[in-house]
Image (cartoon, rainbow, N blue to C red):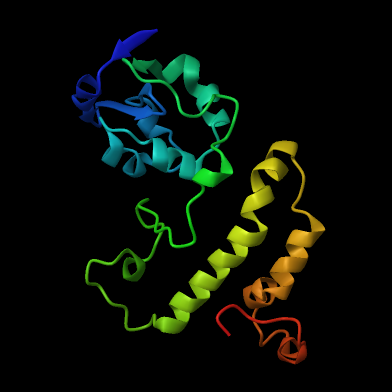
Length: 191
């Protein structure tokens, strides 16, 4: 397997010559840009750069194995992989509740900052978002990799926690289920 420096990879930063690094492995995505399910626009900002964090926030490690024979160019000289090819990143590397994604359009502009304020989104929206993220991090994140790997649906306890947290009711709307307001154990996210 060939070895490259980070500086060598940085020279391949155009749509016609697009390399990037994921977990110390160098990938040539020049031809793959056209067929990437998320579109080329999400890959190009990482052309010639290390995309490890963003990659693992969106994909399992198994995705790399699928394309290794066609797209892998080599590795970064003197560095070693942090994550094995067969294991997803450890759960302690999951983003915190306060995490704000850097993936384009994954977060609304009013969350990403930069001075843009929405006339429609206020503190209740931020409270709702934070409440949902807390619920997911407490009840979904701890078992999601295991459930996905085993091909099982989420556990009954997970659905019950989402129900008690009001996530299921908020998905279909309280107007469709007026009795929700009368159920003491259910609290809608952010009130």
